[in-house]
Amino acid sequence: MLVLVINCGSSSAKYQLFDADRKVSLAKGVIERIGQYGSSCSDHHAAMKIIVDRLTDKKTGVISGAAEISGVGHRVVHGGEEFKESTLITKKVIASIEKYSALAPLHNPPSLSGIKACAAILKGVPQVAVFDTSFHQTMPEAAFLYGLPLEYYRKYALRKYGFHGTSHRFVAEEAARRLGKPKSQLKLITCHLGNGCSMTAVDGGRSVDTSMGFTPLEGLIMGTRSGDLDPAAVLILLEKEGSSTSAINDLLNKKSGLLGISGVSNDMRDIFKVAKGKGPKTRRCKLAIEMFVYRIKKYVGAYMAAMGGLDAVVFTAGISENNPWLVDRIKKDLAPCLPVGTKFIVVPTNEELLRARDTFNIIKRKRGR
Ligand code: ADP
Image 1 (spheres, rainbow, N blue to C red):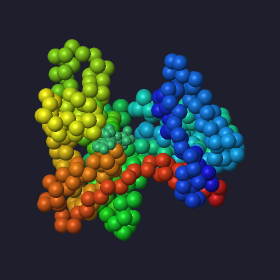
Image 2 (tube, rainbow, N blue to C red):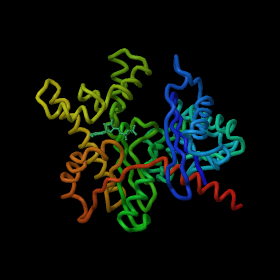
Image 3 (spheres, rainbow, N blue to C red):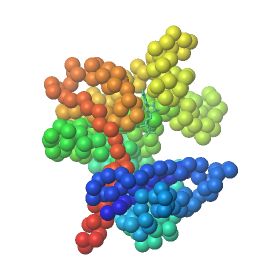
Image 4 (cartoon, protein in one colour):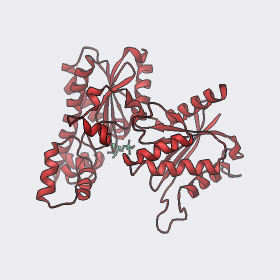
């Protein structure tokens, strides 16, 4: 069965075609600058057409016709509290994803455009939504509620949702396989350290707490996001800087984190380079690395306590997969205070493969009915 996996952003559409039976990727690519000035790709509908044309191109394509595609799996960032797992896309599901655009205004609308474009271009092909939030829907109330008056949870759905769920689920399953134990018997802490960074406590295969919150701003120090902060600091910034809420939103999401602390870059590679030298920004870069590491260690301690034990800390995404120094440093610092035998492992993430797998399983189930 051939499954096409799509990840639509506001101006890009990534795609990958899988032979889901053999679990191999046949083709992948990205369409960029969608809808931007001077681009030949005006919208997501045009982007989907280009993708299908590329895949079916007589000379360079990998399939002879769109009819060979049996299903499409879409990344959808926010599924609110409704979607606890991946789901077959129906009119009702589309209406719900539209509703949750209020919670993810930058992410859900482009996914919807991709879904609607696929429905028009690949008529009758079943589509599946794979949500970034659904893996974390197993968190207990005590973990996902904020210490605000409870009516705001009811009024505004204000709670911790968590993100990067597909990556945390994938690496937790892969780690269990490598450790040779069923996931139901493992207490894992998964660390997704890329441009965005988050950690999850995975107890018996279920997410019981995660560091990102109502939005992806909470938790770890990230490339350009501040992570955890006293909310009163935001109020002071609003007052003293005379800024608008959107300027503060920009400051917290785009100018903080590693970039704001180092004054150099949001990219760990650049920060390491400067930290190793003797320039004017060396101290700030060293501090950025220290703060990054410190917060990860703090979360490991917190999540071990939350789960009442720990079998392994699992690292994934760009920083973990390319920077052995950082993982070693965290391991060296933490090993003495963790249960004897706690493993530290690096597992490359593959969210697309998990989306393809979910799509394949859901379509197989549908056919079997
Ligand atoms: P995303 O979260 O966007 O998927 P990635 O998982 O690709 O991002 O991670 C990107 C980040 O990985 C970069 O910003 C960079 O900080 C980090 N990275 C990549 N290669 C290295 C490296 N060799 N050393 C340190 N960090 C690296």
